[in-house]
Length: 75
Image 1: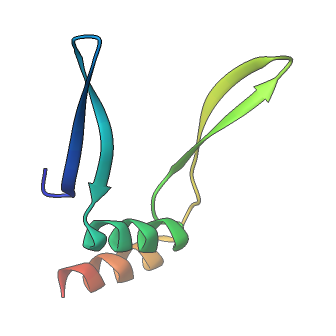
Image 2 (image 1 turned 180 degrees about the horizontal axis):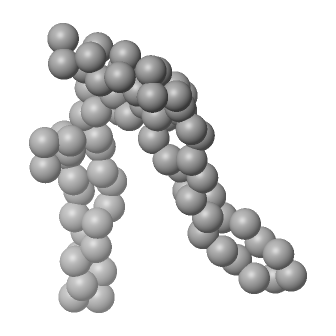
């Protein structure tokens, strides 16, 4: 819940459904930085012969780059 600022719930046919979800700006900025610096994995859908598959992709970083980034986060 620390990443969520607002959740709107809707009732449809006696079922509760999640409507709008607003994430905190600080979370989105942090996630965006990690993503664009290729520090976190991404998942993507790939379709071949009408079969969809979810594939996880990793961009590898050197041990030095990872240590530098972890030290930055600690500071």
